[in-house]
Image (cartoon, rainbow, N blue to C red; front, side):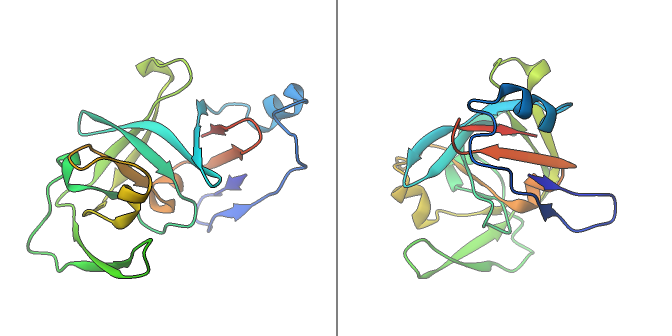
Length: 171
């Protein structure tokens, strides 16, 4: 669980293994007031969710170790050429040049229900844009939009709870 009190940095609270699995009441208590999102386990303990950026739906890798959210060029997010490129350490260990989006975008994370009413908007996220090696390693084919959902987006919500046991995220 990551809770962000107003004006504070995120903190993490670890719950006993199995919360959200056998003990539905405990999951409900911890996630009260949040929207539950189904995650898909893809490989090596990694999870994706369905997300939309600028009207384009794409898979989003939930990456609590990423400081910034990144989209690939196929996402259609425009780069501001007046902002110098940033270099990000790629999954292959090499630096990758990334453009910076010209405007902040809302990232809509789709819930289990699959309806807009039950989706969650992570608002005002200025993303990096480029074709990171991680997208290919995740099996994203060239030309298909994809997103790495980093902490800059996740911390826009006051609380987030992840269950790797049940492949659920509540935000």
